[in-house]
Image (cartoon, rainbow, N blue to C red):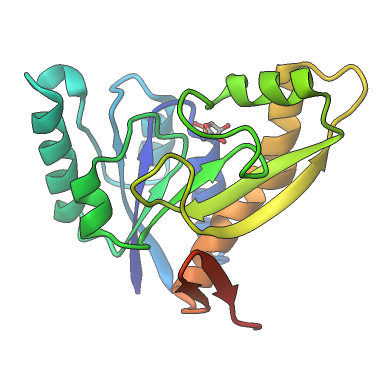
Amino acid sequence: MLRVTVLVSGGGTNLQAILDAQAAGELAGAQIAAVISNNEGAYALTRAAAAGVASAVVSPKAYATREEFHRALLSKVQETGADLVVLAGFLCVIPPEMVEAYPNRIINIHPSLIPSFCGTGCYGLHVHEKALERGVKVSGATVHFVDSGTDTGPIILQKAVAVHEGDTPETLQRRIMEEAEWKLLPEAIRLIAQGRVHVDGHTVHIDEA
Ligand code: GRF
């Protein structure tokens, strides 16, 4: 059984999609072991509690230095016995020591078709503001492994979403969440739990069912 620990910072709609998939029996081979947030006020924690999933808060405010926070975060993740770490709207930079501890075992959902509209400072609504400024006709979401860079790890899954005339960053964000993010993240966990995902350098190969 693949033990999955989910890191969150905000509303937790991606966490909810994972919890709903688990409840529907769609995550065979994986179990959501715990949820960890850097933000004690994250509604994602309420979602975890409602689903009976253990949660914890590791807040940077509780530590004198960024390094101490990083050590505490890694220690908490390890305490959960995670085989796979899922970043579901987690807004803190993952420290190098965590990437080293979990090589190709941390995945992230990003709300664009990487390599477009990603990298440092490009998160949340900023992603959709940039996409609309550029006038793209198609955007979407990407699930990728986390490496030492920002949104630079091997791509696992992507899904395109049409941009509509008159879209605002908010309407585009919502459509990408509904049509792409909430489908891709549970699917990626399922594929990894089935042992069908293989990384070859910077390319990910997925075995047919
Ligand atoms: C989502 O847009 C996701 O793509 C990005 O952060 C947001 C998190 O939303 N990484 P939620 O907390 O899952 O609702």
